[in-house]
Image (cartoon, rainbow, N blue to C red; front, side, top):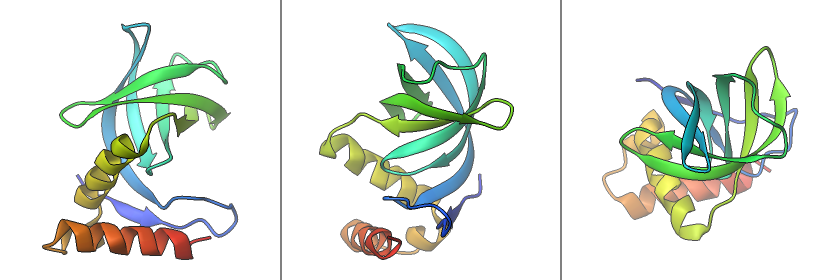
Length: 129
């Protein structure tokens, strides 16, 4: 699985996004509703391609097999079946996402020290504003 980091200059993003292609399960009220592909990931949200279409404003559980599940609200749709998701999670869950992003990011994976890699990631995120 390959990934690369994108910084969008035309949009104000709070967090850096990593482009990925990973399977994602979407559930609500403990019931799986859909299966799709994660398109990109940040500590604040994600883009997922999934059908059937998800309801804007509704909160779902997004599960990445082997990595965990995060609650997120659909904030927009774009393209044919892509959705913008904002995660509704606390700092401890965001740290888990930081670790996953570090694993998926080729430029972050080169750091032996997890704390150094996360500090670099946070520093680059702040500069992306």
